[in-house]
Length: 225
Image (cartoon, rainbow, N blue to C red; front, side, top):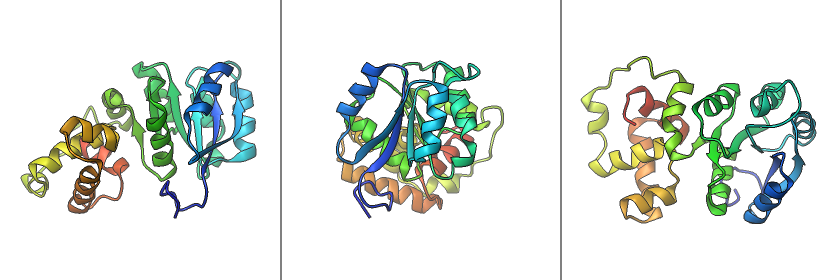
């Protein structure tokens, strides 16, 4: 297993989709050797062709793209539905509008981060998505609830479920479920990244969940965010 935790040797291959060459150049410069750009595209039609050609583990996809039928990034994801078993889509956009977030999530994206993200955090997001997690910028958590379809309904929660967790584990659980990276949780709670990892492992074990994606859905359904 390599550093990314994806179970695959070498760097994680990605396709980078954005209609601004300067931005794509900047993203390339921000990535480290754990991520390798194997293809680029600047429009809906180009993106569909490149993703189908390379079938990369992760596609970094802007939400607003020219071409196609005007559906932007969501249209690309829908058009590549047959390769979703090979490629996971991570939206990378300047927009933090609810309609944009919800549209790409419903189309099949595994995450959504804004272009304000740092280079190291973007690499972390790519590796997490490649490993099967869902990744969202923290302040977008409310839109994620809408996309999961749990905002309008309640799921009963018993004291026993939360009683399994210590006070600190509950704090970590809420932040991770909101899409915070380990680094952001550590900074927020003034603890080490290693301690965050230990708490997350304990939370998943105690709640009998297998990933942060499941944890987000579990917490959202119980209105713990």
